[in-house]
Amino acid sequence: MLRTYLPVLLLLGFVILNAVLILGIAHLTTKSQPTAVKSQPYESGISPLGDARERFSVKFYLVAMLFIVFDIETVFMIPWGVHYRQLSCQVPLVSNACPTGQLSFFGLGEMLVFALILVVGFLYVWKKGALTWD
Image 1 (tube, rainbow, N blue to C red):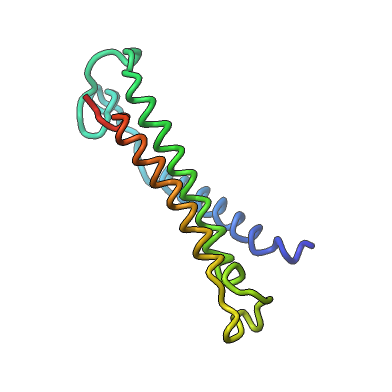
Image 2 (image 1 turned 120 degrees about the vertical axis):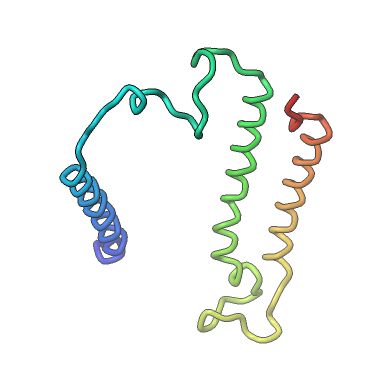
């Protein structure tokens, strides 16, 4: 069982070691020289305006939620892409390939239905005016 997780554990160990090494080198090679300008908040190259506790429009939250929904929906395409060959073959794969004459439309059709549902949802949101920012 350890053998199946060994690549993941090695990658995790490499990432942690790399992060610690980079932070350590940065700490050893740089000098901290705080100034009033460096201590000011900085946001996308623009000096912050107003209070940080100001109220946002409901449209902001609506667009944020729609982004998350559509972003998560596209993540569901990754497992489909991984198993596309299996889904489009009527019989089990032979040497990681589908035998001649055994291809089906199921794998592609499944994703086309999924994408169609996403497009219909997107068009509905667009027609409702949820994406206008005024």
